[in-house]
Length: 281
Image 1 (cartoon, rainbow, N blue to C red):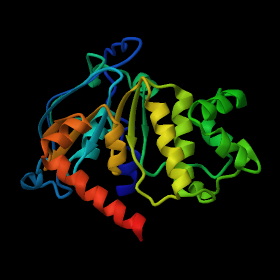
Image 2 (cartoon, rainbow, N blue to C red):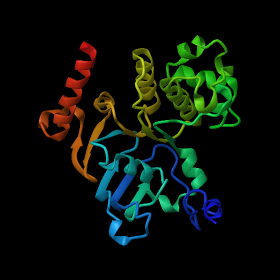
Image 3 (cartoon, rainbow, N blue to C red):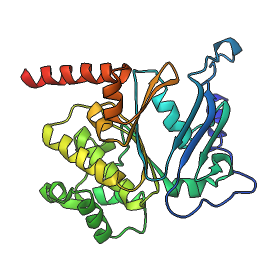
């Protein structure tokens, strides 16, 4: 019965009865008085503790916003709400001026792409995994996407190029290389909105440079929400949102928040000291 219950679970969020098309071009994002609770697995109302509290946030079209904060502060939940992987308990999320609940799921998935922290790759070639994003993508369009992200040199370093097999769940590639394939896969779709959960796995310095360079190029001109685990990513964003206990505690540019000397400045100083210590060792 439990297995059948899982199989009967609807795929994706409820479809709107009368979907409205998103405007062409860049898309803004708005969270309006959003609160969210995951709910109790025991169906006990007492356990429905909110993980987000009255979040209001406007992200202009083309702006790159980094979400930072300690574990459990609500960064991933905000990203999930923006991608409509779940709906808010209270409040509304808008994209391009429309409520997400009024946008057809297939259009939302074309216009907004999520690159998760641990991207899933099928046990096949790089080309196959890229065509999962766009079945009609040609080899030339794939080469062009690698070039646009500054990753042609990495592709050329692989003995079989696009025909390189990635192994089960991408096991033949390093964590950083799997992230590179995921970024190219997102680039092929040419979305208007990106939601990026930065990989925290340790990668070699060259791969880290490639990931950072590809992220910058992929985000250029697109509305981008980054869950920033490395604060070097936050420092390159147009705007930093500092979260704590499900609330926005600071909002501004990297330099402005550093000058303010608040929680973000303290977090950044701690991160700088820790990374400097690793480098010295």
